[in-house]
Image (cartoon, rainbow, N blue to C red; front, side, top):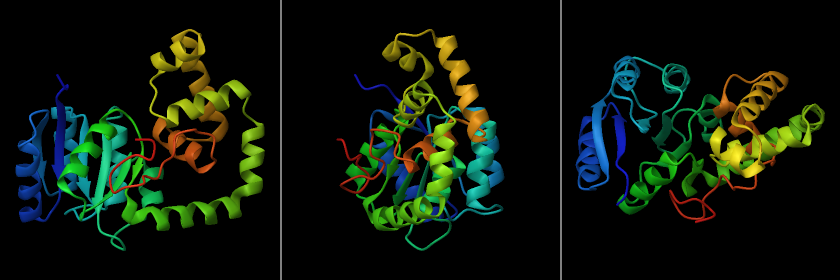
Length: 233
C-alpha cells in the first residue's frame, strides 16, 4: 500500500487550481489538505497542516513567488516545495532551486507525470521538468563558467567525507540514511552537515542540495528525460 502524500495547492488562478485539486483527489494516495491563491495564507496554512509537498504556482497573489519559497522553507523546513509554472513567467528554475524548491514543473505537464513527480518529490529528489531543461542547463553552464575558480576553491575547503555527504543530501538522503550508508553515527552526520553549511556560507540543506548539483558533486541527475520524471527512473 502506497503511503498517503499530503499536498497543499497554491495558485491565484482559481479555475486551474480547482482542476488540479480534482485531478489529484482522484488519486487514492494523494490528499489535498488545503488550497489557496495567496502567499501569506499559504505560509500560515502550511505550518498548520504540515503537508509533505506544497505545489505552488509562480503566479500567486500578495507576494513574490521566490520570496514565498524562501519563507516557506524557513517556517516549514521539512516540506518539499514544487513550483509549477510556465516558461518565461517569473524566476528561472535555478533561482527557485537556490531558494529551496525541490522541483520546477510546467503547467502543461500531463496528469500521470504530475502524479509521478509528486511521488518522487515527496521522497526528497530534485526534479526539473523537460520543458525547462535547456534553460536550466544553460544557466548552470553560465554559472559554472563564471564561478569555476570560486567553485574549485570552495571544494578544496571541504574534506572528501564532507563532499560525499553533500552529494548524498542532494540525492535526498536523510541524516539517518547517510549514517547507515557511511557506517557512521547520525550525530556525526549532523556535525558534518553543520560544518559544511558554515564553510559554504549556506543557510540550509535545500541550498546545499542545489549548490551540490550545480557543482556536479552529486551522482543523481537533476534534469529529467521526460516531463516531470527523474532522469534515473
